[in-house]
Image (cartoon, rainbow, N blue to C red):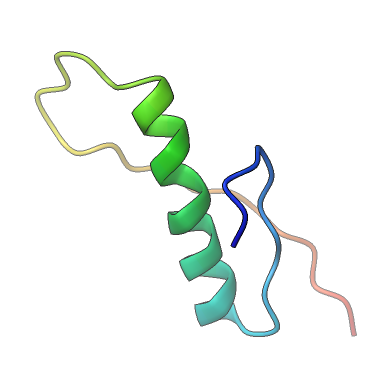
Length: 50
């Protein structure tokens, strides 16, 4: 995956999650979280197409 500032979706949920992880790493390298005493957890909705 490119280290550009975008995230490519995957063909499966697992592939999409892995792509999100890979896209997050360079972002956190450039903008590190400072003084975070706990894990960061978030959720988001994605459209489901039939």
